[in-house]
Image (cartoon, rainbow, N blue to C red; front, top):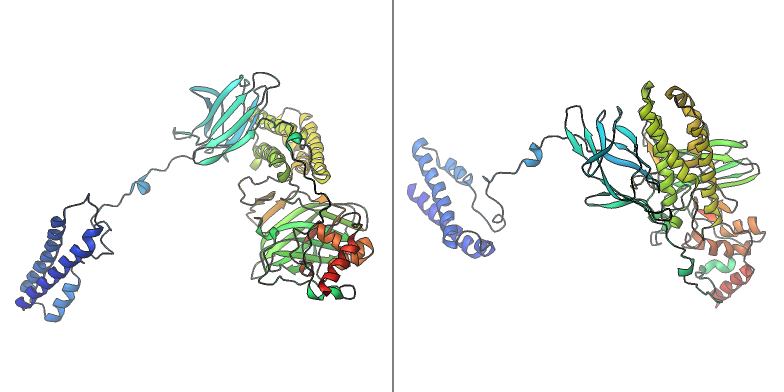
Length: 583
């Protein structure tokens, strides 16, 4: 038996040596041990295993079958795949798991700086922590955070002209002091016509510009594009287009698998979004976006409008008969789960004007958004105003009464944010619809500013006026607009403890020249309804060609813009396409 064990040991040693020489050692770095050391190490491992095996056999007189099992359980010999791995006895770093928990670092939520250096800072820290604003080695302001961790600070003295770097420092109840990861960099102009710059930076992340120098007049820099007599592109009509006059193509509820994805489907949006509301007589239509195949339930106030399922492309239209009087209403859509319960709800304010034909739509980049025009400056102002007011309201949560200092800071932050929004104007070249959105928000912000300025200084009086003030401010700014894209497109999510998560959108904008595509609609039918003749459908196509992959496959739930007048050559365009198809 011992001879067999010896031969087995020699065989294993020989195999291990060959593996080490021809496979493992070529992969070992020159910085490691010498080749001979590696061979010896492998030999010692095998020798030790065999020795232990022999001692076990002598001491316990185990049977042969048990011996084969023990050999198999010996320490494994390194293979080429195993070689790069560290030995089993190597210590595993545990620094991360052993690191003591630290207090949450304070962070900037709102930074408002006026050209004269007046500054308001709002943010988050550990609840009830003492928050200080440090400029270099000097503390320029301090306040105590509320039970929720929110705080707002108005600097007693405006920042002097020049460059400043501000850091938040929070000291918790345990006496531990934590510095903010973010740094606010502020450049206050020397003269009245100088440019103000304020930004918040964090290592490893892009800077958040708060105030940037206004760009010069870019009109002179815009290249004039002469389109000449170029005609707009128009796709080949389908093979059955020659029969279009007699039978317009029906709308398909889904796109073919090979069809390119609609640009709208590639835009990141919230889980549900209401894109438009349309009224035609007593019929109400709610259009929007939702996950493909989602089951949806629509409401006008608390009255059910109807049910629908989202198409494969993510569009939906809910329609029903309901008498909606002139005035303010809430349109809502609920996403139902497999058990028929509400999983998510989206709401949007809707001001129903007089008239039998009414349409209101969300902005192209989100409800009421003009980000494509001004790089998000307008949405940022609305967001800051909403957040500043949210901090003010938070001071009164759970029946709490704020101190005079806390109220003055939060109130000043709200006033500054509303003032900036009320004075905002779009750059030259913005569309009339975009200007209407901004002008309406600026006007409402001015009304909210006058209302908050007229309140007395006593905390009790401000708390009593908050509900009415909230409706005025929310009309101007809507809910808080997510900056990080968590929701995107101007929606703010609110998780209610007793109900489903709710997304509140900013109010829709009245649009006389928009239509919701309904099931059964065709471009031909829409053209006949709007222009009196279906043959003028080319006008609608050319105005919405970025949304239409195929004139035969317009999607229910899409929102099309409809020009006031048909193109003068709309019928000629149609005839040319028919002639081309007949060749």
